[in-house]
Every structure is written in structure tokens, then in C-alpha cells.
Image (cartoon, rainbow, N blue to C red; front, side):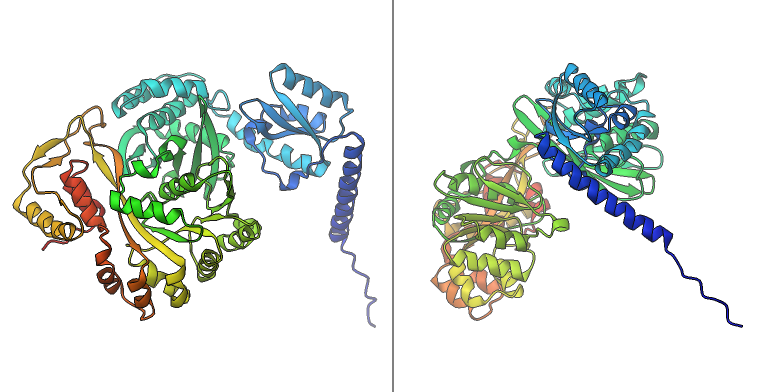
Length: 566
């Protein structure tokens, strides 16, 4: 006898469907009510939540009032974004009054419960932070500014850090982080590296492109500092086996310094790198960047053209972004429209439409470039040409009345043309589109307070003489070999012997001879030989000129580029 097959009901699936229907109905109702109450509606499912904003209201009060603070409209003016389920709720009105009494200016939105639940869930992260010995939940900009004036050397930073760690108190962790950040900003570090090892945690600053040891701290202190840093950066405190990226800002006077935080799990804990984006570091003009006068004249001529493509090349940290920003500031005027596609936006430039690549929303260099061209720009800056499609569109844009600025990964200026061909760009159009290709590196400047002059060794003299032959062919009045300067080290340069950086550059300008050569699929060597009579120094030649001028050392030049001996 066959059994009767009973119908199968998916209770869980049905319940999920009903919940989804109710959620959508509630959202539609809140949208209607928001119009009635003359308040904007916010869908909190797609909004970035800021932990330090959420922490302004206790979880119990937020849940009772069916509300949540979810971000800052303007941190300096203490304008906070507040989402409410019902603006008529007495509990919600009480929380708003409390925020106002503490000097905050609530900007009110209406939101559905499902969105508010996402804010309430974030309190789990905040509860983890509150269980540490940490005190307040943010870094004092005023204190950082004060410390930055005091901490002028790595020695003073190291001493104050050691004294603070030895003290026990509720504000110890905030103080440690303030010292690390203040010191880095004061002495001009570009990055802070915090690296856990078996016995202790190492802190290093990147000064003028080279890492310098600062101090060591114990693992217990570091765990508390890491919790505070994650909270500031909007990262998850309960995630320690995955990479995370976040950011926060410090206001020093009228300047906003952005700190980009990257956390990476390692064998002995989570390592942290903080990148310091100080607007003062990119305020160099083209005239102040150390570009050889003849090359500078060529570049100024090329960026005045209404169309064409200028490409900068070089490894990470070679100053390509600074050069592109200097170009943008030079060409900017209220009469033209400039659009950038960057990954990420490192510094904000007034009067320029800057956009940022976002892979999750499919806004790539390629899609951004296509969209930018529909905005009728005069100048387009593409952060990097990574693929053939982007290269082709950038080339076409330069042929249709746009000035295109971008970067490309090659070792030298001559490598730009073969690289574009490898990316699928038609060699016949490269000559018409590419105006100039630049390669660059950054050298540390010798400290003017302690550098010393010495006679070069016989090996050094041979290298200098060999490179000066090329300089003599291209320039009148080539420098002669005399004494060269070497690093020493003093308090002014934190005992490194160097303070600040200067660029070395080379370039290839498109001319008739080069344009004819491109059709023959030339090698880099052939391109260099054909462009020899343009009179532009190579990076090694530019570097030797700067060594003989006492700007940098031969050791530093050798560290940065390969100097071929005769």
C-alpha cells in the first residue's frame, strides 16, 4: 500500500517572504510620512555608518526612542545625522534635546526600523571598545596641534612616548596615539608603520621615502591603541583575521589632514599602516619641483595646448601624483572644466571635479573615463591607465579636443610607447595623441645643516665623467667635477643626513622623427637614440647634475636608479 504524500510547506521561506513584504511596506509608509513631516527619508541599508557618531547616544536610549545617530554632516561644526522612526516620539525629542545641550546640531531624517536595526547592531563593536581601558572616543585636534609644535625630532617623540606608556591612567591610550600621530605630522612622515613581532610591537616612520625606526611598545598597550585606532577609522573591532581599510581626519588650524588606515593580520597580531595625507605636501608648483629648466619650458608649452596626452611614469612613491596635481593647478582657470578619476582621491583641489574609483559600484577608470567625456570637460586626469580599453579611450579623447593627463607603469620615458602598443593602442595614432612622456624618481635632499664636502673616489669620478659626456652633448655649460657632498646626520635631519626630497626627471617629446619611427614598432633603445637630439637630460644625467650642485649624494642617486659604470 502506497503511503499518502503529504504536501511540504517551506515555513522558513514563507516567513522570510512575509518579513520582506512587511519591510517594504514599512519603508513605503515611512517615505510617505517623511513628506508629511517635511523631513528627508534615508535608506540606512546603503549608508556608511560612523562609529564615533553612533557612540554619541547610548544603545538603550537609541532603541527606546527608535532612533540612531549614524554620521557627521560636518564634524568641525558638530552637525550630526540623526535617523528617527517617528519625529513625534517624546523619547526621540528628549534625545535630540540632550544632543543639543552637548553642543551638537542634529540634522534629522526619517528611517524604517530595518535600517535603524543596522545602526543598533553596530553597538556590538562599540561595546567591545568600551571594555578596554581607553577613555574618550576620539583624538583631540587641539592636542595634536600642540604636540606637533613640541615634537620636532624622533628623539623627543621617543622620549615622550616612553614616559606616557610608563604612566597608568584612563587617557593613556589616547595620549599614545596622539603622540604617534603628532610626531609623524611634525617631522613630515608620509606613513606610520606599526608591526607586531613576538616580543614587542615596532613603530616606524617613513621619512623622505625611507623607513626609520621610532620606538617599541608592549603588546598590551598596542591592543588598546589598536582598538582606539579601529574605532576612529570606522573599522570592525571584532574582526582580527581579515584585512580592513578606513580613514579619519585631524583638523590642524585651517588644514584637514586625512589619515588612511590599513590593517593586515600577521603572525603576532594585526599590523597597521597609516598614510598621512597632508595638503601642504603637494602644494609644490612646477617651478619648485626641481625640473631642469629646459624640460620645464617644454612641459609648460605642452600643457598650454588644448589637446594631447601627457603621461608620467615611475614606481609607487616616485611623485607622479604630485606632478599631475601641479599640472592641474597650472592649467586651472574658471573658464575650463577639469574632471579627475582617481583611486583614491588623495588631495582635494578647489575648482576641480574630482571623482573616485569604486569597484563595488562598477565605477572604474574605464567607466569613469567614459562618463567624464559625456560631461564636456576640457582637461581629464585619469589616475592610472591599467588596461587596453582605458588606454584606447584616453588616446581617442586626446585626439578629440581634450588634454589628457595620466600615469603608466614603465621604468623610463622611452618605455611608454612600447607599453601603449602592448595595451593594443594603434601605433599610427600614438604619434598624434601623445605629447610628452615623463619618467621620474624622488631623491632625498642632503641636510643643509650637516652635509660635508669630499673629493670623489676614483670609481665615483669615473661614473660622473662617463655620465657628464651625455650632459655635455645636450647642454651648454655642463658642470665640471669638483668636490661632492655626503650625508652626516644631526638633530635637524633626525640623524639621517637628509631632509626633504627633490625630483629627477627625463622625458621624450613627440616630434616628426619619433612619429615616423613608431610605425616600425621600435625598441626602447631605438626610441632613446632617435630622441637624443631633443636635448632632454636622462634621469641619470639630471641626477649627476644635482649631485654636483650639492643637492643630493651620489650614494642616494645610486640607491634610486642604476648608474652604469663606463
